[in-house]
Image (tube, rainbow, N blue to C red):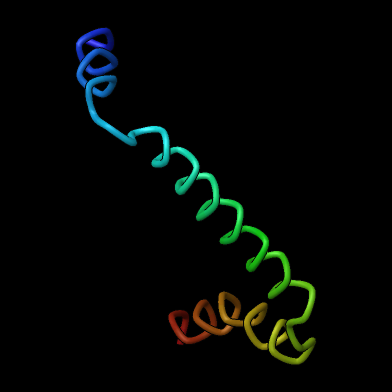
Length: 61
């Protein structure tokens, strides 16, 4: 099965650009996510951190 896919992809012109685009998107997404985590406001982090605890309190009432 893999040999069929590999042989089929080899006949497509310019197919080597797709792995480069995929890697670029993957890399940019995680760099952006890392930047967002480092620059997030501390009060926002504290608010989000309390959400699971608040929903448990509301369910027990």
